[in-house]
Length: 248
Image (cartoon, rainbow, N blue to C red; front, side, top):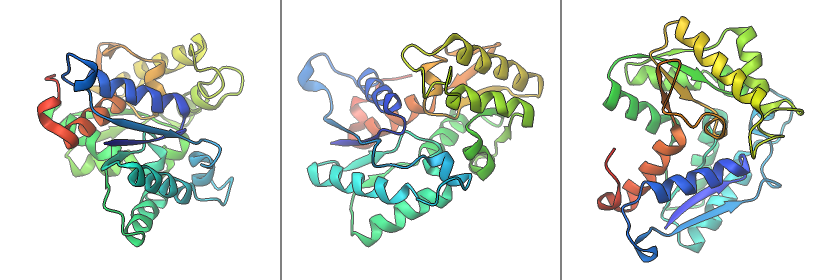
C-alpha cells in the first residue's frame, strides 16, 4: 500500500493521488494500487513559517506520527508532497524519529527523485527553480541538484517575493484561492518562468507542491516544466510494482 502524508497543502495531496492513478497501468478498478491519503493539516505546523523562524514548532514530529499511522494501516512506502518538508531541519528529524520508532516503511525523498529524473531525461542542464522562500533559503534544491551535476537557477530577491506571494498572499495566493487558482497567482508564476529563462534556465522545476495546480502545461516560455508531484507519483508506483508503471 502507498501512504501519502496529505494536508501540506491539502490539494497537493489530492493531486499526487490523482497522478498515481494516471501513472498506473490498469484497465479495471481492481487493477489499481491501494493508496491511503491521510490529510490532517490541523496537526502539521506551517513548514515555511518554521524554517523562517516564525514558529518554534517543528512540523517533523506531526509528520512522523502520520507516517506511523499510515504504516500501521498497511502502507509500505510513503511520501510527503511538500518540498519545504524535505529541508534537512525537518526531513532529517523525520528520518531519525522513524528509526527511533523502528519503522520499516520506505520514505521517498521528493527532491532526490526530481533531480534523478532530470539527470536521466535531460542530462546536465541549468534548471530554474520556483519555490517558497522557506525552501529557497535552505539551499535545498541547489544542494541536491549539484549532486546530480545540475545547476539551480533561482529568482532574485524581487522576483522571489512574487513567487512566494503566488502561494501565500491571503487575497490571491494558492493557499487561499486554490480551486480554481486565481489568474493573478498563475500569471505571476508564468512571468517568473520567463524571467528564469532569461537568466539561463533550460527547464523549470515547480518546486512548490501546489504550483502544479496553477501550471499544468508540459512547457512554458518554450521550456520543459518539471512536475515533482508527477515524478513522485511515478516513484511510488515504481516502489510498489514497477510492472504497473506507465511508460513516459
